[in-house]
Image (cartoon, rainbow, N blue to C red; front, top):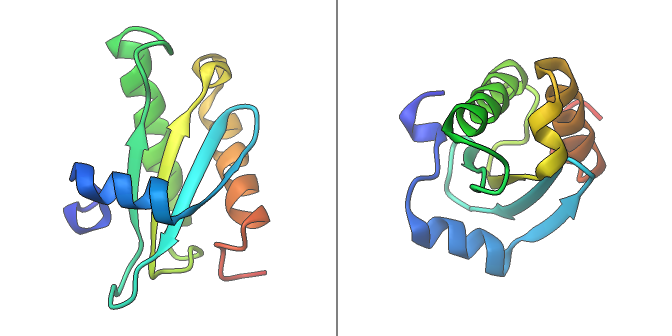
Length: 114
């Protein structure tokens, strides 16, 4: 993902947690908030240390970034989206993570093609 598609600042994460809406399934939690004036969506990823070591956490983040890259033309754009991985995500393959993410985005109507 390009830099303008990422959420890096703590203030942006906290704003999504406090002002945004959330939805979850067993593997992932999604927080999203509409940001007027943005020309694209932004994502922030959070994988805690309870999930596993650095290799495991980075693998999950890589899978999530790749899934967003493949879905980027289908996502409604003026949103900040924060994804938090839960414990079951560490045993999942890329396709399972993408399916779980797509399910969350579809349920919360964050996909354009609905």
